[in-house]
Length: 314
Image 1 (cartoon, rainbow, N blue to C red):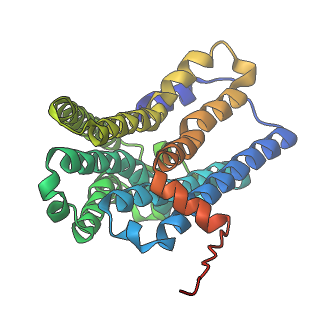
Image 2 (cartoon, rainbow, N blue to C red):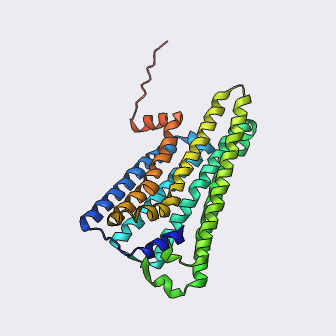
Image 3 (cartoon, one colour):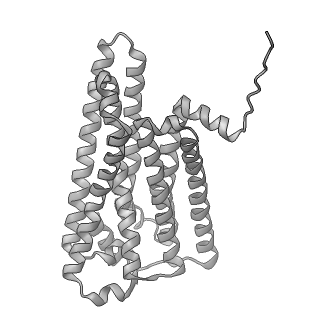
């Protein structure tokens, strides 16, 4: 995918530059959406920490970690977008840190969804062992493991750069894009391999857990919780599809640009908006709204409901 983007950029002969007004408007839209999304996600995090019950449930711990990861990803993504206008050339070391964090958070999202699906699978298919397996301590260890696995691709890219680039490269100023920071064939192979392995593994987990929960729901006496878990895993699949929208971005560029060369920057902006920004709003919000306990706690916390207890003397 990175190679396709690079070839597309190199083959584009007529590059269109935004006017000041258009660039300003685009940055206002992106920054505003980023603030709105992080404000909503911040409300979800405040709701989580407002009730100790959530911190004792592995399901909610994994969910709020997904929200936090999306918040961090939004911050980095918006920062990189604004930097392309404010400072086209960025110190390579600073760019490396931003791309490292952005890539890591991007890789963690599908892995977190897989973990949430496994938790629902254990809750429905192995209910007697759920409280023993899915403890808060083990969930925290699992989250740490997610960060280690998610960072493998970024660490590998940095190691390749240290081996192939001179030290002066990290003191230079470059356009802060992965293609400029990690330009070698080894980086491209690492990107493709990590994405294919990660997504294949996550899809296998989602399909397996869904089938097992579906089978359990058919033979269970109480089908309510099993059907709800099945719907939840399906929702994880939808969230994963939203995450994968960014994978088709280069192909969308290549398809649309030849027909709309004069509107090249507008198309780039719209594709970025719909594949990178808006999905970060939909996935945590939809999942949070579905959970009645979470919604109830959010309403009580943010509407400042006052419970009046009337004591009647006997």
